[in-house]
Image (cartoon, rainbow, N blue to C red; front, side, top):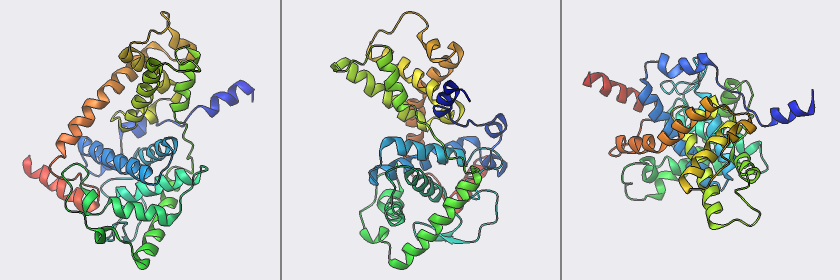
Amino acid sequence: MAPEMENLMTLSNPLATVEQLSSSSSGLDGIPLSLESSIRYAGLQITQAAGILLRLPQEIIAQAMVIFTRFYLGPEGGSFRTNGAKVGLPLRMSFHCFPQLMCAQDISAASIYIAAKLSADARTTRSVCNVYAYLMSGPTRKMFPNAPEHNPESYFLSEGYYHSARALLVQTETIVLRTLSFDTKVVVPHHIALTYLQTLGVLPPVPSPQSRALASRTLAYLNLALFSPQLVYVTHQPTTLAVAAVYLAAREVGVKLPSNEWWEVFDVEREELGFLVVALRSCEGWVKAEKARWHERSCPLTADEVELELKGLHAEV
């Protein structure tokens, strides 16, 4: 293989197929698209929060969020209604100490564990279990509404519960890896975007306040895009995402980029750039709408909670 092709492959990700985007296991199980998007958003929020509490670099957190998203893609992936891939799963102990099937937070924990294990910042199973026990406890389970009074007993993991949670984490890791066919490669666009800014001459070695603001806003768009309902991280290559973030950030901060079609230098077509610009700009409004939708109650994450939500939706019809 030519060196140029090898370099391109190191900056590319496996993308979702048309079949995976047009049909999901959750949809086949009767979950409406809007509810599926809400549960995915809540699971991604938990993944991000866990990564911060585990003090992981943003690159690893982003990789874990992409792995979580990939797991629920297509009819062969996981379902938010059965909370696992299409395999027979016995009753297990969940991270918040209730016996039930694997839940979205369990897939989230496995995604964080896998992403960290593949890096130089691996985390122990005890650390991951403790963080998720805390996140799914009373004070933090309702991530959108006002949290109830803090009670340490709600997230304490006894030795027995820890061993159950550890066994679930390891078993869930296996399920996630099998569902992804052990393809865990995730290239994030953050460092690529900063390289593009330097290439365009708008991020000098000694950054000015404006160039700092440009870089910060570029990274902010890339982080926000991880929650995109259009799933842009599994439909577009990281190089394309980086170009779109640079384009939007430059317009917002007021930095003048080359007047010609500079994105073509990075092998991005105008139509693809236009789609991503619209998708990234709409993310903030969509996130605000999701927060408003679930302001008074928690988004369902377990199988029982999803069933109750579906019954409520059917009753309204």
